[in-house]
Length: 221
Image 1 (spheres, rainbow, N blue to C red):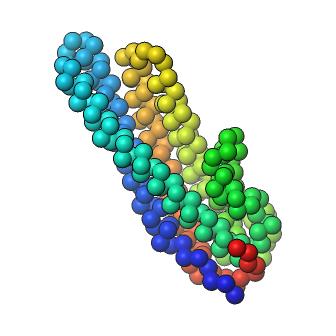
Image 2 (tube, helix red, strand yellow):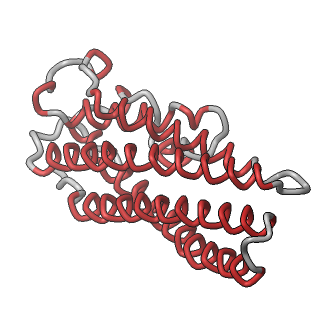
Image 3 (cartoon, helix red, strand yellow):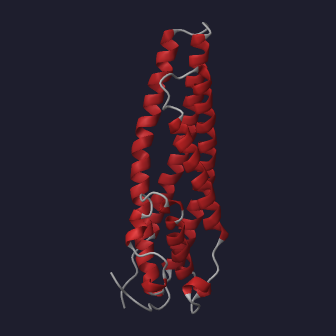
């Protein structure tokens, strides 16, 4: 019998990082509002160039570490998913999962399929690990609504983020453009906070399922 991979430590690290990203995104949204206000007031003649420069520097201070934090969080979270997937295969054969292990990583980056492959991977890990559903073919086991709530909020955040970045594509940024950027940034941060709230619960529940594993049915590394 093979030992299960420890997932609680990685899960805790991923959860903390996800929470920090959520807080950082809210801070970034606040900075976007500061920038919009500074630009508006400068163009109206009620703010100085120094205030505009201060807003720009504040944006760099907040967004640069946030970008690095996002990268680290993504890597740690996917590492947790991969370990949890290996454990899930030791409870439920790999051929019952809808996606192979390679999609644990690639599913996030391949265009189009990244809108649903990661959720399918997580759903199958949850169902394979759930002790209350053992003995039932994997694809006949009930899904949990937490994964759906997480993924819905995550995709919404993703779409808002794409719209946010597209707002910077124009040659000339008007005052209204800065306002739209601030609005999209705020909405994306809110959706991200909701997604973080639910995904932390998903990570905890799956980690708990796998903390006291059932007898192994199959093994493949």
